[in-house]
Image (cartoon, rainbow, N blue to C red; front, top):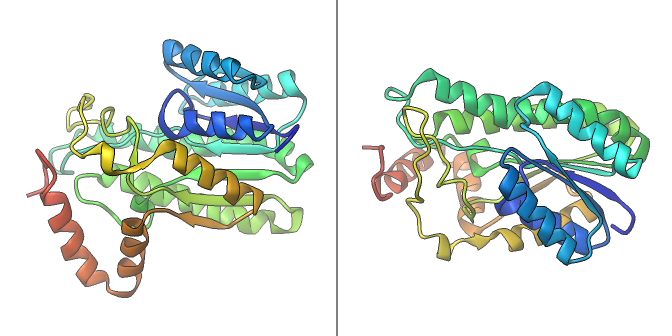
Length: 268
């Protein structure tokens, strides 16, 4: 990765922040985006402590103009772009019958359209470098999860978009990776939207038993270096994808029972 330029959206915490450190320590110049100015500054300070050449850009991927500006600032700072990591995302935790439609729209705007916008503006530069486009999806992009209809829909949409784009770009030599980390220790569950659109504020899961964001970032680095097509992480994630493909009826029952057992689950 020495001398490569990597743009990471939603890099103020979790997997995005870990990727900034891991790719930077591998020799890349890193540009990170986020909506929270304080968290963005903290990420920049951590990158500086590690001697990583970087830029921070306050931007909301769900806003088309912000996505265009993030790419423009990347090129202005470093003159090229080799890897785009579409990481920015939000989740939800509510039954569809109870959820405001605004929650579904917000998830689609950030998770799906945020990927579309940033990829659109980055693509000319990635064509020039024959670089990589990475989508941080989810097991929810393979298997719809109860209580997370909007999240599942956004990740299915992201994966369909990237699969079609991968096929279009085969002759041009641009690499497209769809990565599904499985349950990972991050703040995505704390910021997940409840039925009324408010953040739920705490995780219903034991974060200490999950794969760490740093472990995910290391796996992502290797997958980009190897120009892999797909990356599905955790044994639970791989088993879910397998069962949903070959035994979908059983998967329905197992997934329903699993999410019913979550603390404070809206799934009954």
